[in-house]
Image (cartoon, rainbow, N blue to C red; front, side, top):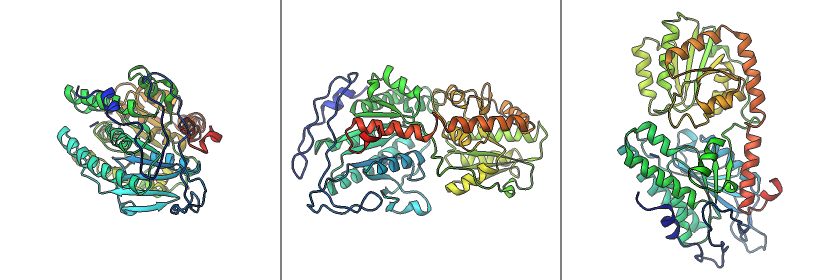
Length: 468
């Protein structure tokens, strides 16, 4: 998923000073070694008339006005705005005065549209491909998606040349697609590392050394091709600098945190408890590494071994493991106590979490999870929902008193911690308060947005300098 040609070979094969159509374009200075700091000249602004960043830009009219920097976001595994991180980043750059375009797969409902304008952001969606689980299925998924993305990226660039391509992994071949535009003209690349793909491969396909070597090579190539590297936490940043030799001055930590202006508690809906005294919630993707099945096993232990009949659990989300979770709940005879509602829009996610007494973070120990910051953790903290979680290093660093941490990765231990917390309202109140405090501080979106703006200021994006 996520040795052959080396990163230096990939960089060398791409022309850095090609002329684009329509006249002279920005000339980048020759690249230095990857570990050396680089000064970048400002991204050019083209002549274009338009009604402003809140609406669709007009066509070039020769009015002499400077056009806004054109930024293309590319994401393969989620539609936008379902991908909250990409959507927040897109809106932040829109607010800086950039013309923002998103290329992503088609989603469900309103996100099935192939093209739309939403809040001043232009979104182009390509037909989604079936999600793979095994190595072969994942390879076919990515190959299929890469062909569609390459075609769409070049199509958008022909329509109006792109200044910056902001690629969100996985997979780690999107930066190579972005770099293909350098065959036509100079373009800046931002590599946004959502997941550590080598660790993901190690977690899901243990023993497949060839796959891991390929994942490492693609990750190195992505970082070598990028002008700026954006990561989700300090652990990712340290790893990029020490293991991948990326200069720290071009690595920015942009945490995956919700915007408190749009992600806030709503009135508590007691009906969601289905007549029970307590509601337990899980919100997020249900992939092989996310531990959703562990959460179902924990609920079975809570109902059976702990003897609780006053708890209802709701699982909000989807993923490759959802069918298995449903079958497991039936097999364990807890289907009436565990409800699977699939993907929900933001309004309903807030309804479920605002009614929850405790939330679940069942992600088990693994090379990937030990280094990753779970978005559900910061979402729970933002809304003041205490949670139970295993003692993953990044989860412990994030929580700091906002949840109950459980050693190991056993469902019974998670269930016992959940049982104790449900019977301790005072502890839940203190955890909720601590979570909100931390989410409003360095873990919040305001701090993350400032770091993103500074990264774009280093690229020379006009408007970002004043914000940095």
